[in-house]
Image (cartoon, one colour):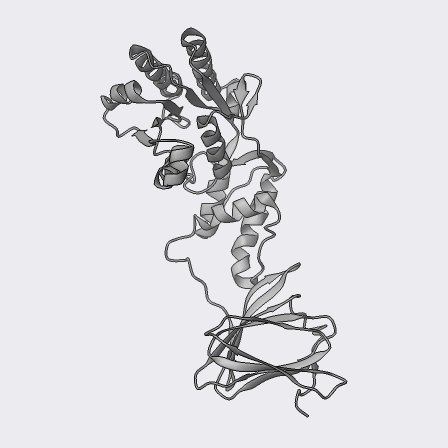
Length: 382
């Protein structure tokens, strides 16, 4: 199938083309769902003459091209209605009745120049569908967010993410303003479904089935918390779908020289201990480095439990129930990754038996609280 994507270098177009290319590269998917897939990319810098040949061969059209922030208001109608008219006339010229998807906006319901131009494009496509019997899909998108969206242009989320990641000021006129948002991956998934003949239709229009409603103030607070997480090490609550999507979006706006950030290494003659990640409901992850011959631990817990994973070097983890004499040993090595649970009520230690540093990833089920450490000194070998 040959697919024409207009506005292929725009926010939605770029993400859609990337996914179509992924499907094309996956031979199994291409064969079973979209055989002989190829993509015609059409944008502002494309030779206009190519539109004619693309419209002649296309088996499906994603019409994503449009104007949303022109220098002159008159450009709204030219960019949104005019481009749609040219596309449809070219398809009719070749008697190509392939399905056509149109990217519209919830602004089409509002009394403003942009909304008028979008509604005019919708009317034109509906008329085209009735005249030619071609299948048409019109999506009135709300605010779309995600990677590759242009900041300081027409997306508050993109602007907030970019500015906060770059230590620039932001302006929030009304923190209580309620936003309806859709995530770019959900948009692309829906468009692929439409391509396969399974759009999510509501009466005459199509829509994205997954929407998120949240205030501007809540969005800003979340993004600032993402920025702060590099210092406090707290992982966002990814059980919340919007938080998960917004965090991925935020990371895509990080400056290219700021992908990394330092951790505080607590070092002494025995090695080091470094906290990595923290979560109020999933505990914390740390990295422990022990020098050759060093033994660490010698304590037990009432409720706190841990998991140790030696990823480099070799050693032994010893356990003794606090009111018994028997010692249990587990030999560990980075050559064979093996998780060792640290049960409560057992005093335990870990000794480096090698001649190089031993690196252990340690997980504990609760974030360390210095006021209630639940850690009691008791040697394993008395």
